[in-house]
Length: 245
Image 1 (tube, rainbow, N blue to C red):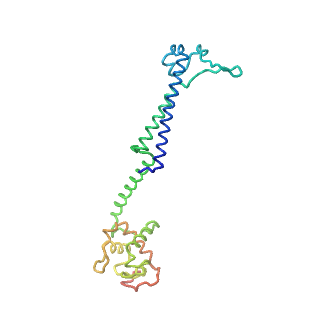
Image 2: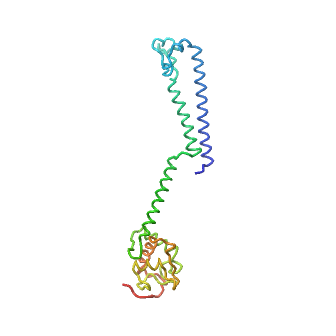
Image 3: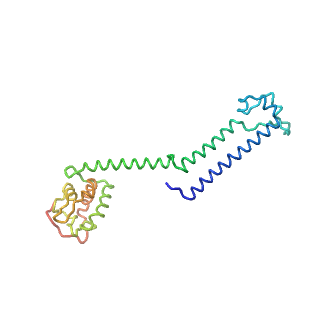
């Protein structure tokens, strides 16, 4: 997925801000360490590495940490931010920079949006494979009339795309016969219609649609054609074939 100019600018700004925060924090921490080292060298020399890591001072050394000012008799200790907290803070900045580069700049990581699209595509592919397998199981011997609104809507769309030229937009007939009356040349049942649409009637100009439509689509358009029965559209072609009651 290509990033827009605004997205690239925003990501660059975030990275630049993160780098500036990291550099400034390191500089401030270095300056504080130098200041502490210059003013409290004897205290630092007496601390173990664990005490330095925790940033705590023994109780007997609190007197050396007192700041010059007091408020209502309350003294304040000069306790800098503990090193362990600063290390954690630095690690979050570094992690954020690496995370942003990996997922949003180079896009090597699978973020939620990408993962969702991948899963949707996989599900759609699986659905298409299932529908294709299911569609191939329908034939002129076992086909039934589909009454589901979704199937009839799709059947109507297939009819409008492929059948209107010969049978009219309302099934009234034209080059082909009228599909709205009770008279049928090659049978008017669902199995007859399925067979006629699938294999066609080449000698009468009706092409075989089995290479264009899968069996499930043939079932849907045949089911839709049956809903046109008795609609009596204007300009309907004269009856042809035998009456099927």
